[in-house]
Structures are given as C-alpha cells and as structure tokens.
Amino acid sequence: MTVLHSPSPLAIDPYGMDVLLDPYPFHDELRAAGPVAHITAHDVYAVGQYEAAAAVLGDWKRFSTTGGIGLADARKPGANFRPLNALLEVDPPDHARLRSVVNRILSPATVRGWRATMEHDAAQLVDRLLQDPEIEAVEDLVEAYIFKVFVDAVGVRFDRDAILAIGAMSFNQSGPPNALFHEAMRRVQPYLQWFEDSQRREHVKPGGVAWQFFLAEDAGEIAPGIASNLTRTFVRGGMDSTIAGLASTLMHLSRSPSQWQWLREQPSRARGAFEEGVRMETPFQVTYRVTTGETELGGVALEAGRKVGIFLGAANRDPLRWNDPHGYDAARITVGHMAFGGGDHNCIGQMMARLEAECLLGALLARVKSIEPAGAATWRPVNQMRTLDKLPLRLVPQ
Ligand code: HEM
Image (cartoon, rainbow, N blue to C red; front, side, top):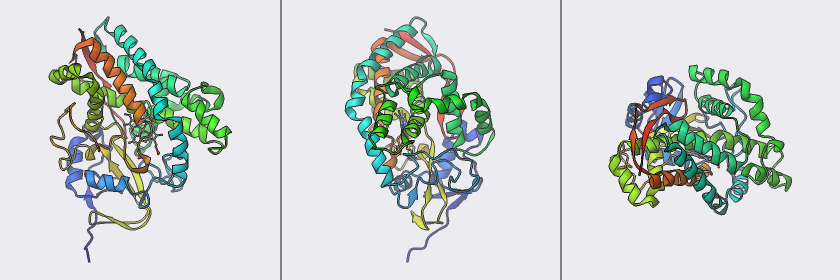
C-alpha cells in the first residue's frame, strides 16, 4: 500500500507585496515543497510543479471550479465572492453545453475575420506613436490598441477609467481581502452601475460577440441571463490579460536586440514571441479549484472540500519541464505552457489574444528598427496578476 504524505507547510504569503512584485523566489520554494504545499497564511493547498498543475487542471471530477476560481470558497456563507461565472465556474456537462455555443460564436472564421481591421488599427497607432518615439508602452501602445480592437470586436461600451477600475476590482477580488482589494473596491464604486448597465442588451453593439450572446439567448440555446453573464466575463477577462501579456513580451524584446532583429527577419514568428512572453510572465498567476472528495496527488493526501491554488506562473518556469526556464527565447517551442490554463476550462479567447498580439507585433516589426528600454519597467501589484504598470520604451523607426 502506498504511504501518502501530508502537504508540506509553506509559511510564505503568495499575496504579500514582495511576492506580487517578484514572484520567482516564492515559485522556487513552492516547487521545492513537493507536488502539493499547504499555504498556512490562507489555509489552502497549492501546486507549482508543472506535472501536478497539469494533473489538477485536467481532472474536473476531482478538482472542480464550482467553489470559484479565486482564493475564497464561493460555496461558504459570507465568502468574499462575486456572482459565479456561468462558463468558468461550472462543471461539465453544463459547462460543455455553454462552451459549445460560445465556441461557435468565437469560431476560427470569426477570429480570422478580425485580422484586417486589427492590422489596420495597429499600423495606424504605431505610425502615430513613431512621431515621438519615446513612449510609455503600457498606456500609449498596448492599452490604446487592446481597448480599440477588443471593444470593437466584442461590441461593448467603453470608458477607460471604468474599464481600468473594473479590471483592478476583478483581479484583486480573487485574492484575500488585503489592502489591494480594499483600494480596488473603493476605486470601482463610481463605475459599478456603469458595469451593470454595460452587460444589458441595449448597450451592446449589433454584430459584435456580445450581441451574438443575446441572439443565442433569443434562440433558446442558452438560458435567460447567461448572455449578460458572458458579456460580463468577456469585459472582465479579455482585456487586462492581453495587455499584461503583450507588455511583458515587449519588455523582454526590448532587452534583447538580437531577438528583435531575428524577429524582423522572420515576422511570422511574432506569435511565438508572444507565447514565450506569456510563459515567462504568466498574466494570471494563479487560479483555484476545490477538491470534490478526499483524494491524492503525487503521493500527497488531500482532504475533501479544500481549495487548491494552481500557480500557473510557477508551472511555466518549472525547470523539470523547461530548459533555461528563466530565459526569454522568442524561438522556444512553447507548446504546453499554461498561461491559457488547461483542461476543460482552457482559455476560450486565446485565438483572439494571439491574433491581437500578431497584428500589433507585426506592425512594430515592419516599422521599428530597434526597440530599447527608455527607463525602468515597473510592475503593478495585483493579487491574481503579473502585469506591468509602466514600460518606458524608445522606438527607433527604420
Ligand atoms: C493573454 C491573454 C489571456 C490570458 C493569459 C488568459 C488566460 C486564461 C486562463 C488561465 C483561463 C483558465 C482559467 C481557469 O481554468 O481557471 C482562461 C479562461 C477563459 N478566458 Fe482567457 N485569457 C486571455 C485572453 C482572453 C480573451 C481575449 C478572452 C475573451 C475574448 C478570454 C476569455 C476567457 C473565458 C471566457 C474563459 C473561461 C473558459 C471556460 O471556462 O470554458 N480570455 N483564460
């Protein structure tokens, strides 16, 4: 009979400010603690090794999303939790039914159909920015681009301050009720009604993705109220993630002139450069599951009904899975990275995110001879995310 161990206790708080600003020493400790650790500060299990993370993501029967994908257990009375997400926080078979409708709406043909507009928008933006080549790339370049192309394609209302405050709320709310959470909740108050309204049929634009959700509701393919819930999910999840991934990719490329030159010679590798960017600085650092019963993972015994944090950012730098895991390599074969999750709930917007990245990087590669740091890049502490706050860059036109 196999002897099972208890999860190794880990005293470090993954939501401490020092960890949020530099998560890599914590990831080393987490992986070294074995397949499953017990984060004592929050009394949850945590996995950081690639193999263990893949096992959890791939097994919804033992590791369910129905307790919510944040730190708090949504099933417990008084939990610090928002309404559950109709797609992400539901198990099969209900999940599969809704996912097939969303997949049809977000089909490869639909995504391909956005390419010309995204290329055009990217070219226009880069041409404009090149008139004054020192930029703050998070706001001037990446946010400006994603806010334009995502909002147009999904067909939702836009207000920059509201969207930034809603993003901060969403991705701090999934952690503990710490100072970041309270500050985000304070900041979002003036926009909560705007956010509710923006999920209503009368505020989505005909022809866009959100509009298609409402048509699917009219056709009886999805239950009443689900179109609003999906619109809410897309507004919350689809922008901050791609902004984070693109900005990180640009940061790494700006630090490696030879890789920028290599990409300029083969711009078709732009997509791979983005995949490597999200592997290195995984935008959603952690997501949670709940154990559906007593179970075992890698020889460690797990109790029933316990939250398990899957530290995707740690798995994406596991030296047992990746050669030179801390080195950015635009030519790396990144297949299997977990920045887009895995298993049944893998990111449904990943084709869109890749297209957005290809179009923006393509516009830059065609026009910019070199891309250089013009000051220190700084990280923005967010409970669930790894995202740059500022990225000063100098773009040298060709
Ligand atoms: C770089 C950009 C992105 C990253 C890193 C990312 C990351 C992720 C991750 C890690 C998950 C799985 C969460 C879990 O299993 O707990 C996920 C799911 C999801 N993502 Fe993304 N995402 C990105 C872009 C997008 C975009 C552009 C959209 C919308 C167009 C989107 C919509 C969704 C949805 C709806 C799900 C839930 C899927 C399901 O439960 O079946 N994401 N994403």
